[in-house]
Length: 108
Image (cartoon, rainbow, N blue to C red; front, side, top):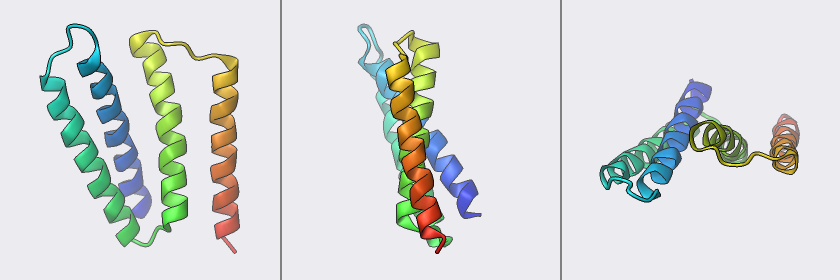
């Protein structure tokens, strides 16, 4: 169940971040900031549930960060036509690799 909570937390966090981008665009509507607040509140609540369900903070936060960075970068490329260069892709891969090492290290 902890993985389900974490996945939902990541989705809420990415949605809130994208809403923040929408609200901060020229001509952006202030209503987007309500979605930002609700998304981040839901994300932290769901992360808390993942931790209560037994997931370690190092693993949970590492996966949260790696998935959040990757999904936000991909979504911003699709939705806002922001750049996604090879160097940025390498950075995302390095983050994912670091999280994998943390996960493997925590398995002992």
